[in-house]
Image 1 (cartoon, rainbow, N blue to C red):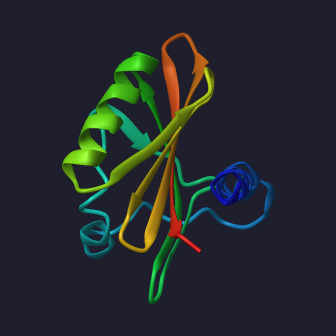
Image 2: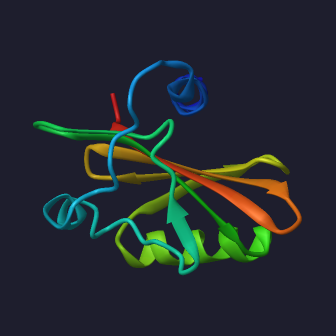
Image 3: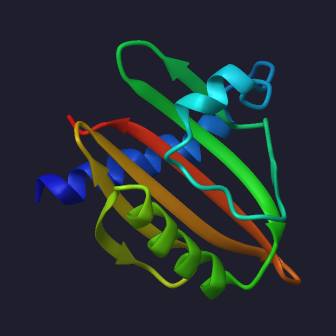
Length: 132
């Protein structure tokens, strides 16, 4: 039950971040990118600052939004394979559209949300947060 509450809380954070006014954060800088070396980025996706946020303190917390043209199932397969190659443990995949994948690593959890937008365009949201 705790896992589902965590997933629901994560989804709320993912979908509600665009609801708050203010300037979107810039794309991660080179220094910040090193903090995300273990989070793969599929070629052909562009960072969408609107609705994204980064907070790096003692633990990483972020919602990174991207969009690109790709086959939805190819994106899901890429993240299942690539996250595990970066030592993230795949916990669950659920949904049809959007498809939500949960990965755990040490003290962190990552949610990868893949959703069709229009004519081959895909929304990709990656959320990283402490496990609890």
